[in-house]
Length: 207
Image 1 (cartoon, one colour):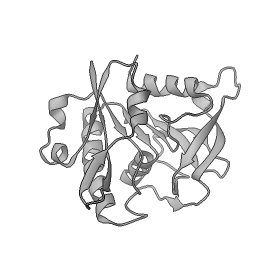
Image 2: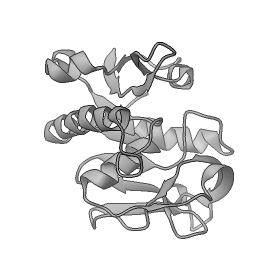
Image 3: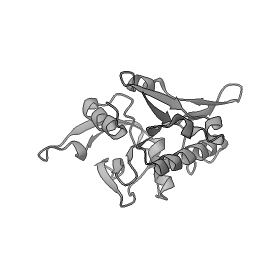
Image 4: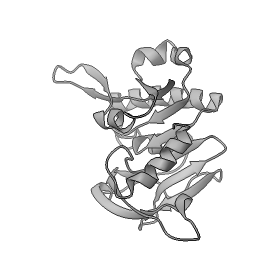
């Protein structure tokens, strides 16, 4: 069994208590895989207990707003925790998957400028993922979109795998840091899901 750390979404409950959570979609996504999904929390971050789990990969998943777009206590806490775990994963050279918020956090980590856009909130669009191109044929996948920020440029060590029609990056890969980023949610149903899963599982070294 492999241990994979997945960062938690952070929010307040009705009693104004802080909660750490992950979507059930992620549990369903990996239900047939021999892995342990370990969600993060403030204790795991503060006590530096990450190394005790000897994780084989890191998933920075969606939820919350990136701190630069909404500066509040919750978003600051998530940025603090996730940034520390991201540094650990880069240092240990383990595969990293950044999804939606995770993509934005990674972009921010590499000091990439982002812009706010209302066109990607609760919408769907088609993308062509180049990584799957065989004999230069296009592989069109219909993906979901739930993000407020867009990224149009990444550091040179990233290879662009897919763009949206407005020129924003939907998917990219950094072999140097073993980072795969997607602005859409692979754990939620997309058109062409099988090919998408193939790339995700291959990157995370999951059979």
